[in-house]
Length: 201
Image (cartoon, rainbow, N blue to C red; front, side, top):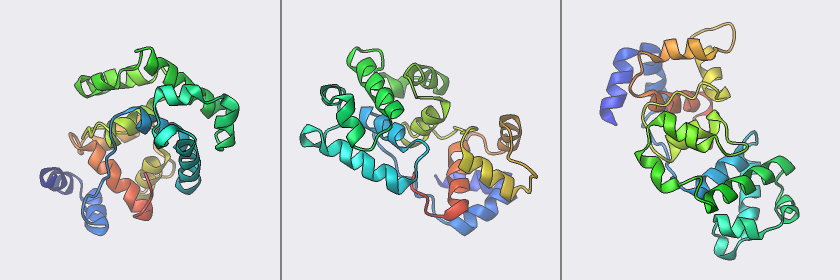
């Protein structure tokens, strides 16, 4: 990771200042599996604290707390709703469980796919958009060069540290990020940390 940090500091002094302030790169990875993607769906558009409670309730409903496609499909939608999931998120998680059980989503194949192929594979599931696929690429598949152009945190941080009048659109973000390649994921992590230094991701 030292190579990535040195590259970012040299290529972009603005980001270099953030790196100095935030300190060591301490990203926490998760397994690239079904449970991690369910977690991502639960966490969509919720505060980390609230999402953690709901995810914990869902896990507690399952044998051994194991979040598997088969265990999810044995729950009724009404029971899932009692965990605190919205009607939409319940439908999304059940769609993911069905597609995984039927072999349409194959987690074992994802590490061998290119980034754009992973996005294509995951977004066939209802409720999984490009943002969720980007998070999976960064935090589960450990891809180093992902720029989550739809992430509000990254957009907010870019507007703040680069002195923009408005939140940047994807083209602006791509332009700024050209100097970060091939370490956009690392740059994004530092941008998240620049906002609060302890956001739960």
